[in-house]
Length: 358
Image (cartoon, rainbow, N blue to C red):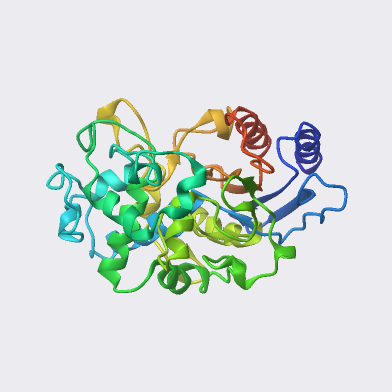
């Protein structure tokens, strides 16, 4: 396995899919492997990637911690899939306010939009610094949808952003504090944080060079999450940085159907719902809080109940409970600048998945 993973990773570096990556694999038995490849950037003097190098997880944040905290609350009976969003966020005032359910947030069956650009209708990066967290929250609470909730699957940041606010309201604490208390600290995820500035930049790869911040290094890449954090507000759709070994600790919990090292994080039923289709009525498929059975980035050996999550920066986690294996891919594929599409990174992800899941 290591030889084939190395071959694919080194080939991807040569093809400039990314300057470096870390791939971690864990089995239910506890066997684990972490393989670092390449450098922080394409420059000759760049630092070598190590096993514990940290990356911006991007949308993996939606699953860990945001959806995971919500699913924990469902386990505890403090939240239901059929609950209305306005029961927890009465400030949500768009025209569909009576029809948005928690299930819509966990299955991405809520019509969405670009949060940062929706403030003034502009997607010009140069003007992003003018926006505030108040602007973004106002849009989040009032922007109307084109389609009714539950009518179609549409992947955007909006459901996870709202879900994070729901979790905070129920638990009376900030999302970052809750993530630390319920997952990061008990799972010894010492290099997982919403606050990468606590670590040196020699421990974190740069993510991108963009038009309004210059080098994005050690700060959250997602524009709306960046604006909110700058103003002191952590959001549920992006912002977590982590290292491969830490993520494997969490994935091992899922391989053990929610219980690990004598501590129960989820019920077996909740883990099964992560990996089973929640929207068959739409002739589409997704799990609760996770993407489900996606050969285009999981590879051809992904099964009906294989679940995981991608991140825009070049990250991916995958869990296959039946095959008793899970893995994480961390990369900064958008360095120095984001490509026009995700074809190259998805082809790489699929090849790695086919090696691990075969």
